Length: 496
Image (cartoon, rainbow, N blue to C red; front, top):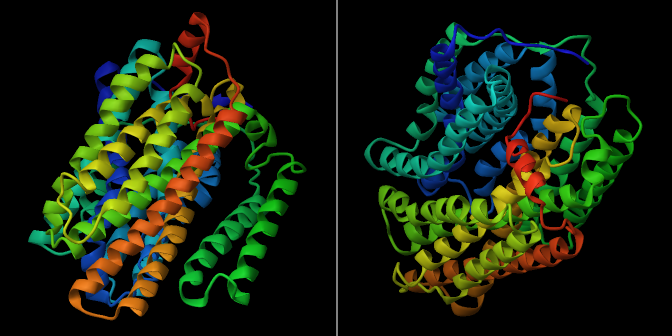
């Protein structure tokens, strides 16, 4: 199906101006993934949220984002990428305002889910606009280089911004900060961006959207309820069974509908399937580490929010060094599993290091080691997995392949946070039941819970490394293929 091309927006300088506003939108999405993590202990105390429910503040966003991302890409293609971009920015700003003004857990949860839904429109439309704006190979490479730098720096900026806003203003400003960013990006985008869309009548796979979203919500909600009800309860087992049935029905529907949300041919390839798995499992380790270390530093060690944000910087540096210095140099010379499998094992070692923590462990010998190992491992995994997640697909499937790997990341983080938080809180409760209650014992109980959950996360990553080692049988790339892969590594969400 043909795609109407965006008119070149007024020459080279205007294209780079367009990149600024598109990049600003991407920065907001990345900021929102980390800025709320730092504020979580403060908002939990302020709104009276239980330990068992706290993960839903993160999960509501990531699940809505991941569950609707594939649909968001198709909506952008057929209704207009610029139009979708602007609507998503305004919607994201409105949802952020609602969350900042929330007086209770339920309203905040609704606002976070709305943020995730509008983010699922914003992410694909932003990448689509970048794709159609920069068509020359040289400019395109520079533009996607800037995009990657924004994505890498945004996480660190979110941690610092979250700490500063929580310390000097209030946790609510971690949500309000999105409003001026979104408005600037919307006004600038309206002025400089050109419209483009697929021609023809749009046909959306609504049954597929309902089935996959319902299945994921059921599974994540079941893992969250397991903390209070137990894994053997009728509610938890029923929800898990319903989730599996809905996802199985989704797979069946996708093989039958004329325009599937996720064409089976995309995930049937062994290499791409293993790449999606690696990204999803890495998200479990990364987001689990963020959650546990945030609470360890603030609740157990008594760090301020801004000190916690600064303390997270080594993890970001480890990702940049590993991804930019090691993975990108070795990728053209080694088969992908030679980088992904060691990366997953290094990440597993980082999560296991949490077993060495106690209430008196120093920063250098404790969370710093966890950060460096998890960050370095993730840096070895993500560039390689992102590259091979879109490798070998046709032009018509490039967008859905990229959307799928982003979905794997979001869903992995959603399920991982819910599961690991359940394990941690259950282990903490068991420790308190057997050791009594005092301020010192309470802190140690929290640490014991994190260590138990970290062990589970390490086991998940190690099992994933074994599966990837067996499943991803792609040989070392030939020089010509490596050059082609370098060009195809740019994430495209414009095609479906």
